[in-house]
Amino acid sequence: MPDRYFSETPIEGPLATLAGSEAHHLLHVMRAGPGDRVTLFDGAGAEFDAEVQTLARATATLRVLERREVSRESARELVLAVAIPKGDRQKWLVEKLTELGVTSLVPLLTERSVVRLAGSALDKLRRNVVEASKQCGRNRLMEITAPRSWNECIEGFPEHRRLVAHPGVAAGLTAGSQTPTVVAVGPEGGLTDHEVELAQQHGWRPIALGPRILRIETAAIAAATLVALADGGNHG
Image (cartoon, rainbow, N blue to C red; front, side, top):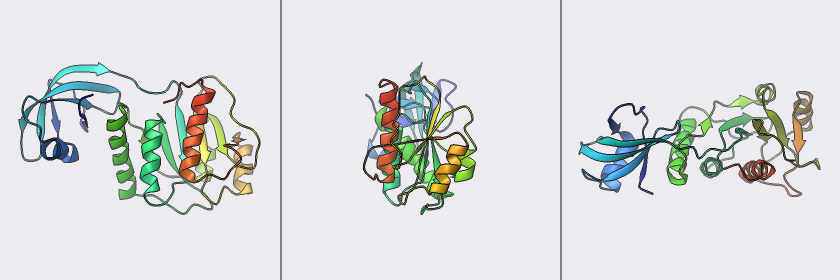
């Protein structure tokens, strides 16, 4: 597969322009020159064969050769509402959920949450989505939403199958239809009994991710994988 680059601006005509970090990588890391061919993607489902045309100090202009709608998305929409872990584990979480085809990541604020993302931290994680999408071949970016409180989360997603990961239950996932699904994953201290009860009152179903206590990022990946297995492997 040729090198992939993300176009932050919509590609609508015969030319595309790369700037910022994407242009830097093309110009100074890959040392591309006129005539070199690359693949562009727009984050909304399309990818493009393109040829480097002109290079400037911080931008590159490419000629679009072919446009394709190429979906590598899952059959089912999957939202993960996750109490974000600390440090480098955030990047790893975002990378793996992108690779697994998760549709949206909702940073979750619970009673025992330690990390509260805002501003530049969210922007950095969204950049991690781009990098992971370049690597795994996704053409549609996983959304990272604004953080939600527990109450905001459990009162939302009325059209989704709503599940909450909780180690104190025996029920696992069963095969279902292609109904959009949201899975909530709490912090390392766990969701409080009150939070779980409140979720159940709003129609959320607790599910188990196995007999052991999992770290946040492991639990989120396990949840995405279990949904895939319940769907017969159609996720990711």
